[in-house]
Length: 319
Image 1 (spheres, rainbow, N blue to C red):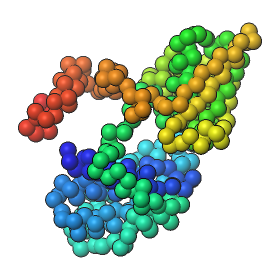
Image 2 (image 1 turned 30 degrees about the vertical axis):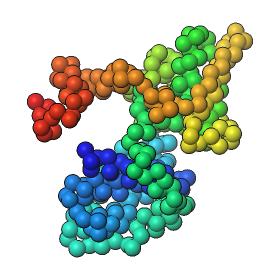
Image 3 (image 1 turned 90 degrees about the horizontal axis):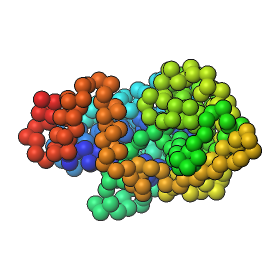
């Protein structure tokens, strides 16, 4: 557990300190160093070797492309796994005598994949504020940049339910990263998860933004496709300026009868500023696990995960 928290903390803090190039995808970048630190901790290395592992892992960072997610290039789904593999490799290389730069973090995240690296931000609140406690959880089964829009839409539709055929157009105003997700005709499931127009359309047509609303069936649904073409997204620099503390969105639904319905969101549901309840998170767990396991098995695992401190070893989780 200590290794998990340490790896998460290091990876997250590199992300906070870095200003990734705009063409980069965060997946596969600082996660490599976080993974390396975690496995090195498990291996019981001393401080000098840990430093070397971090320096070597920095040079194994992937140069990941944001366009893969925007275009539905499924190679993007391998980024996180490969970065974990590179984290394991970093420790093995150091054990075999390989070495890295003197300051791998400063070099790679200060000039190669990132525009700058702020060392003060890297260590701000170190030991007092734990990044794993500021994690966020997804109930919307798509890119986080969609979530402000979907939260605003949820609030709007809770008051006035509408049908797709009643809608003339939907206008979404959000921050820069969200505004990039403007594909009105995503060609596969991955592209759909990185499309604000699709996310809005499938939420309205299916009544949900869960797993079942981001499938091949939905991508091919004529009603969803038709509505997505009537959803328009643009950036408001004032909303971009609210990053990273807030991830805001403003939604206007124009109906064919002339009415305009408006919704807004600032902090995203599931973030540390507006966390989901334990019941909501449990519902997400079962939504995911029901695809592979019968409910009794999933329930057994769910209950054990809430009592990790009582387990003698992790292998008993699946007994």
